[in-house]
Image (cartoon, rainbow over all chains, first blue to last red; front, side, top):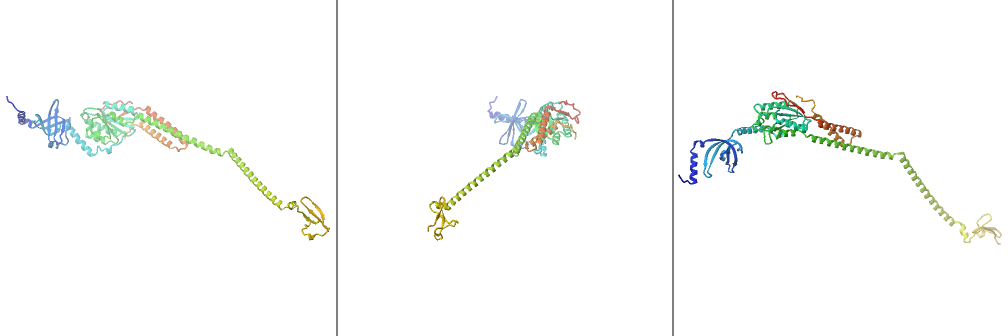
Amino acid sequence: MQLLTVSQLNAYLRDLLDADDLLRDVWVEGEISSFNRHFSGHCYFTLKEGDAQIGAVMWKSVASRLTALPVNGEAVLAHGRVAFYEVRGQVQLYVDMLRPAGIGLVQAQFERLKERLAAEGLFDPSRKRPLPPLPHRIGIVTSPTGAALQDMLNILRRRYPLAEVVFAPCRVQGAGAADTIIEALYALYETDVDVIIVARGGGGAEDLWTFNDEQVARAVFASPVPVVSGVGHETDTTLIDFVADVRAPTPSAAAELVSPDIAELSDDIAQLRSRLETAMSQRLTVAREAVARMKLRLDLRSPESRIRRDRQHIDELVRRATAMLERRLSLARAHLDGARGRLEALSPLATLARGYAVVHSPTGTLITDASRVAPDDRIEIVVRRGRFRARVEP
Amino acid sequence: MMRTDEHAPGEEYEALYLRLQQIVEQLETGDLPLAQALALYEEGVATAKACQRLLDHAALRVRTLMDGADQLPAVETDA
């Protein structure tokens, strides 16, 4: 029995493993987990299979040669050597080659196909078409026996029973399924459907593989009307999801996406009804107001109002005439008064009143010169009141 | 092109709906002669009823294309 230091033990184990031919050149199949890319560029991960696992290291130089770094859960074939890492006392696989294994390999092919179709423009967002707001005919491509068909029909019945469904049955899995999908699609292209749903219910990744077929993708791309894909569950993504105009997570979601909701349509109609009522009642109000305005104008031209107006006019004329007359009268009166005053001022009677007298001959000649009378001439003297005769004294 | 049916009910609905919209908009401009407005209103009420009737009585129609799928069983096509 020997007493060893840890270093001595680990060095022994290292030499032991290094000496083994098989461990120097080995392919290991397993699933990636705990994948960690260190900032240095080296990658550390665990390869698992069932309950067994082994630590793995992939140097930066190896990792940089990969088109894509592996992800957790990916099944891979790793090539390298197995060695003992003394510092940690762990057996590790030093990977110098990494390939997708099984479904991983198919996945890699799928990614290449996807890149190729993307480069061709099959996924171009600019060619995605909007769904028709009211689809009259809805094409459905799916299995006649799957639950997906009934789910979709139930949703369409509930949401938009005005639609007509044109169902093109196909097989959704197994050999030759892709061809039946393509045939079903092209059969629908010959009809006048407004939109097409391509669907299948959930299943394993292999079950959905038909929808990753390049020819199926190209057939969807060729559709003259918008296509909605509803394949598998929420988490599943297939090639036609990229090509379709709209991707729905499930068949039911696809049916909801293509159909307007009948309740909303009913609301729409009710809203239009109420707008109709409002517009009509407004129009009637306008008409009523127009009638009222007309009536007012008519009233203004009625005989009664005419007579009333005329009578008013006559009253006014009379009033003006009276006023004019009165003005004239008072003016005349004032004139008269003035004339009388002036007359009185000139009258000889006023002078006679002060005691003067007028003397004239019996013939009426005024005697204003004493030399014109001789003794015994008769004269007549007029005083303020009355007149009398006299004789000139000798 | 193969016609699936002479007239889908949805087409009738859409035509009526568009007419209703048109009527409402026309009436809302408000400068129509009264007789024309009344006629439009009556048509609008009738159109709205027809729309609602179509919605109320619609029953989903399902047609199955058998071409190219002859190996498959027919699906029930009730509404």
